[in-house]
Image (cartoon, rainbow, N blue to C red; front, side, top):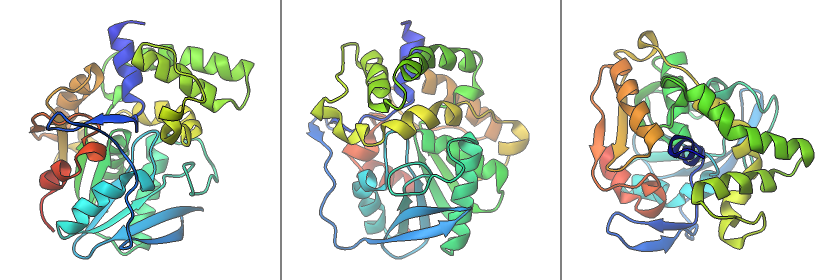
Length: 296
């Protein structure tokens, strides 16, 4: 696999395994005990969503990335709640405890419509929307399709393959062996995910490797949903003048490094650079993005 393809593969999933924080320390993400969270099931947009809510203050909706769910973002949600926000996280359609009606299909636009429906249902008009990784692509699609729904959008390192030349072809090449595996082994999404992880890490990953248990819980939505989300194209008409911040760490992979300036050009805003922040900073050091978002 070429370096470019490896970078594109890596952008399709955030690995909830050993994480390197901004101070260079390494830790394993675990969901903290939290008695301040309210959980519920919300009906919207023709399906149901598992929703978690923390804090008081101006509303803030977090859209998770590939291989993730609301529970994995507990630390980031708590940091933002402590900063004075009413923070809502949820499992995207097809993921975790949310419904699967009319899924998969629709890519980033379907998920953007879901986010807009949740904003309305939860009385969060004008909310700040923080989209993480592929969730950043969803957040940008929300701005494009539902102007005014969000008061502000922050897209953290969006792997927007659809915004750069060759993104579609590269994604097709990445997914070819995964799709071949599923043709030979229908329903084996853990095995298909293991193929992606093997390419990302450069060594074989077993489908039952306990180090990847958190990611494996979301193997099916990652494999079935992420490529279509990241291939969403954007135009100047959709993003110009929108309340958008494209945020990037100090060492983005090749895809993100190409997508960020293109998205910034379309929106007419300069990227926000967070020096030293790895892609998964929201899992390893949630205070970093809490500072980026600012107080409530």
